[in-house]
Image (cartoon, rainbow, N blue to C red; front, side):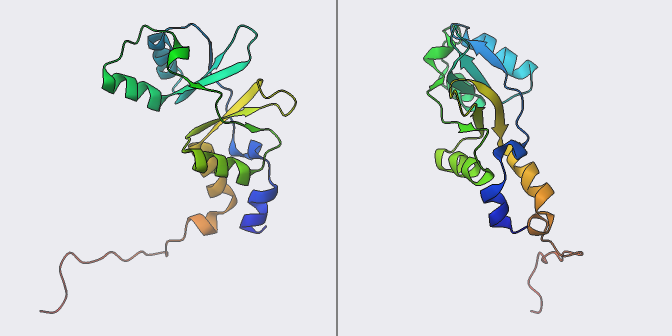
Length: 157
């Protein structure tokens, strides 16, 4: 199948969405960072009491706070990305890649088309790359069978 046609027609669910790790609003930032580390994830969704998506906290947020020497005992909602960008399960791969590229996101919540506050998965850059490598190996792996390196010195003289 043609590369562009495939991206425009195939569902973003092909990007291997993972079950999102979630916390309720009010949890301390330090606890969220511990949870991220324990689950080996780069993003956590934040839910309200009704378990509706209200934000996302990522490794970039954590690194920024650590670099600033910020107080990590505060509630997660003070530092999360509120009303995060998301895609639906009916979004195409092209839409997912465009949303991630335009927003500079490494993680993107996947929500239900009927309820955009109901998170059903999380796609990330690794899932997108895995999809691309598996579906388009000839385009991705374009090295010749025996790549020739460059010499450290100029030939001749």
